[in-house]
Image 1 (tube, rainbow, N blue to C red):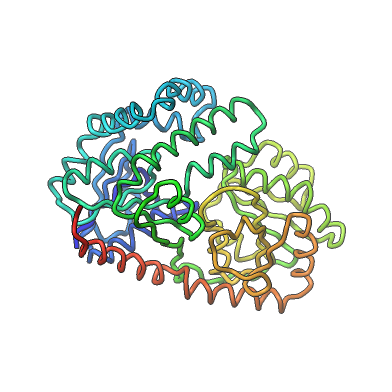
Image 2 (cartoon, one colour):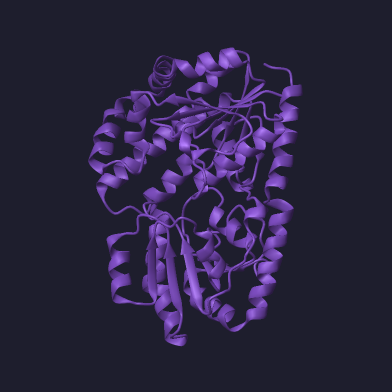
Length: 417
C-alpha cells in the first residue's frame, strides 16, 4: 500500500500535542505502508540535522508565499495588528463563500503546484492531509486525480474558535476569532465534506464534524502515545502540583491563572509545603511576576522534556474550561501512571471514569481533590495504575495503529466515486 502524508509541520522529538499527533500519524502510516510512505513537508525551511527516525521518504517543499499569508491570518504567533489587517481583507470573501471556495482552490493549485506534481508522479493509493486550515484546498484537487483523500483532524477548528471567542476581552481578539471561525466553517462545509474519510481524535469531535460537514464517513482515531517512551524512572516529589501547557493558547493561559489565583492559595493554606510547577513555553508576564514573588510557584518556561516534571509531580492538574480535541497532557500523565485532577472539559474525549482513572472536579473542588491525593498515596497509586492500563488498552500506538490499518484497508477496497 502506497501512502502520501501532506503536512505543514513535522517536529522531532515531538513536544506539544499538535506535534505528537502528527508524529503518531507518520509512524503509524509508515508501518501500515511497510515503509512505502512519502511525507510531503510544506515548511519555510527544513533542517536535515533533525534526522527524523521515520521509515519513509521526507520530501521538503518550500512553503509558498501565499501560504505564509495564510499563517499571518490564522497563526497565533503573528502580531495581532498584522493578523487583524489580513483578516479584515478577507471579509468580502467570507460573505460570499462561493468566491472564497474558488479562490482557495486557485491559490492551492497555482501557489503550490509542486505538491500536485509529486502526487501525480507517486500515484499513491491514499493521501492523508494534516491541518486543514492550510491544506483543505488540496482535497478536491487530489480527488480529481482519482486518489482517495483522508483528512486527519486535531480539532474541529470552527468549534474551538467559537468557544474561545466567548472568553476574549478585546474587540481585536473578538474580530480575529470570528474571522477564524467563519473561515474554518467554510473549509469544513465546502472541502472536508468532499474527502473520502475524516479522522477525529474523539467521539465528541467526530459527532461535531459529522453534523457540520454531513460527511458519510467520520471515524475516531484517538490521540495515542508510545508506551516505551513513558516509563517513570523518577522519584516523586512530595506535595507537588504540575500543569503543562503552551501559554499563548488562551485556554492554557486561563488555566494557569486559575491555578495561581484560586486553586493554589487554598492548597497552600492547608499544606504549606505544596509547590506548583507551571511547565511550558511562552508564560505570560503575570505568571513570571508571580513566580518572582512566590518561591513555591515555579514557572519553567520552555523545557527540553516536560515528562521529567510530570513524572516527579505528586498530582497532575488539568483545570481547562475550553478548547478542543483530546488533551495529550492527560494521556501522557496517564501513561506515566500519575494521579490526575481534571475538569470535565479537560478530559473530554477520553474514556475515563471519575474515581477509577482520575478525579473529575469543577474548579472550586480542585483544592480539596489535590489535598486528598497528597494525603492518600495509595489512592494516587491506584488511580495511576488503572490510568496506565487504560492507555495500554485504548491510547497506545499499538491501539491507534490497529484502527488506522483497518481504515486504510477498508478504503483501498472501496470503489472510488
